[in-house]
Image 1: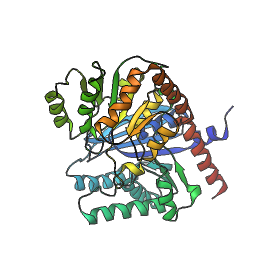
Image 2: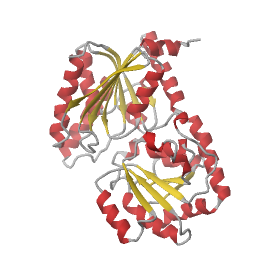
Image 3: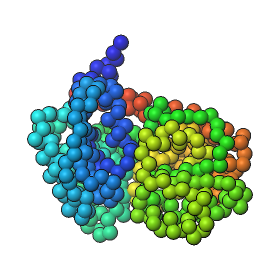
Image 4: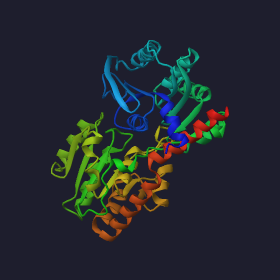
Length: 391
C-alpha cells in the first residue's frame, strides 16, 4: 500500500544541481528519487573548478523510475572565476530552454542556490532546497572575494524555501541569519547501508584513506604514520583512494621512505569499484588538519560515513563535531593531528582482535541508525507536510 510519502514522491518533479567532484550526495539523491519513481528527475553535474574531475556538464533525466536521457554539454573549468561565472549562465540557459517546471530544486552550493532563486522568479522552479556543504571562511585569498562569497551564501539561505546542512554546526548559523527552525534540516553525509558489503570481522592489517589528496585533508602525515606502525606491525598496508594537488609530492615521499610495498595510491576509485571491498579493510583514516575557519567545521565527513557504513572503525582528527560523534558512540578514536597520536590507536586496533570486533560491531549498528534512506524519508515527510499545510 502506498503511504502519503510514496504518493507525494511519485507526483513530484525534482531538479538536482551540483558542482560535481566525486560520488556523493548528488548520486544518492538521484538514486532515491528514481527508486521512488518520481514523476521527473533531472540531474545536472557542473565541473568543479577547484577539483575539475569533470570538464563538461553532465545531464541525466529519469521519469517514473526509468532513465530516459543522458547527454553532455561543453563548459569551462578554468580559469576559476570565469568558469563559475560562465556556468551560472549555462544553468539559466539549460533550465529556461527546457519545457519543464520543477516542483523542487536541490542546489548543493550557494552559487547554484542563488541562480535557482532567479529561476524561481522566472517561474521555472516552485521550491528551493539549499543543501549547504558548509562555509569556508578562507576559501579565497582576497578579503573582498570571501565577503562576496559569504554574502551570496547568506542571501541564498534566506531566500530558499528550505535549508539542508551536512553539519549540525550550520543550524545555529542559519538561526542567527533569521531562518525559522522548521525550515532547517540536518542531512549528513550518510549512505543507504544496503549499498555496501558489511562484514562482521576481518583479520587483515590493511588501512584505507578515501578522499581528496590535499593539505586540508592532512595527507602529508600518512607516510609517516605507516613508518611508525611498521615498528610494531611490519605487514601493515595502506590504500589511498583519491586525486588532488599533493599527489605527486606524496608519491615522492612514499618512495623516499621505502614504502612502495606498503602504500598503494589507487587514484580516483569510483564507488561501484569499492562498495564491495571497503569492508575488507581493518579501519579507515580521517586525517584532517584541524581548523576553525575552513570548510570542515561546518561540514561533515563523507569518508567517515563510508567507513562506518562498511563497518570500519575510524581513527580521525579530534576537535570536529563528527569527531565527538565517533568517541561518544565508541566507533574508533579521535586524536591530535600527530604521527604518534594516530599510530598508537591504529596499532591497538590491528593488534587486538577483541577491540577490533567491538568497534566494528558498533560501527555496523550505528550506521543503521544513520541510514540515509530513513533520513531522506523523514526530511521529505516534513517538507511535504509544510507544503500541504501552506506553511
